[in-house]
Amino acid sequence: MQYALPLDGGPDLEQIRSRLLATLGPQRDELRRDPLGQLVYGILSARTHDRIADAAFRRLCNRYPSWSRLGTAHPREVEPLIRSVTFAERKAHYLPHALRTIIQLRGTLNLS
Image (cartoon, rainbow, N blue to C red; front, side, top):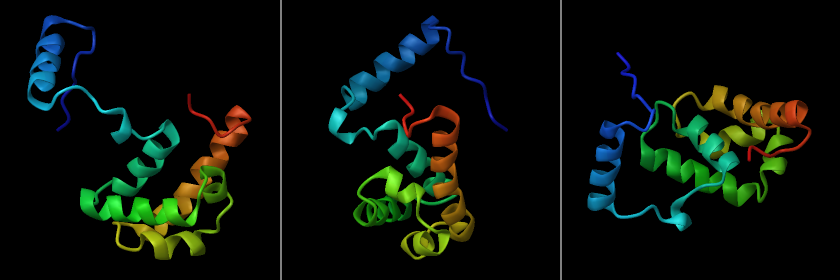
């Protein structure tokens, strides 16, 4: 079951945010991914352990220096790089397709 989290800025959300900041400190920009990187990581990490998804993400970044290059890749090129993630064959198809779809819908590869 999935629970809804009210994001109306109510007191509960502020209390949770304050506790997270007190425990973890402020967010660190160097650890944030750009929106496209987060999309790619989100696809890779679905039903996959973080350490496995992290390694697959690094391999993709090393092989494809830009997300537009990944968008033009054939799934057969992508699959060996992400073989360790759950449903690698499907994700190898979805990743380039998702990036191409963004270009078709927005005219550019940008989620800002």
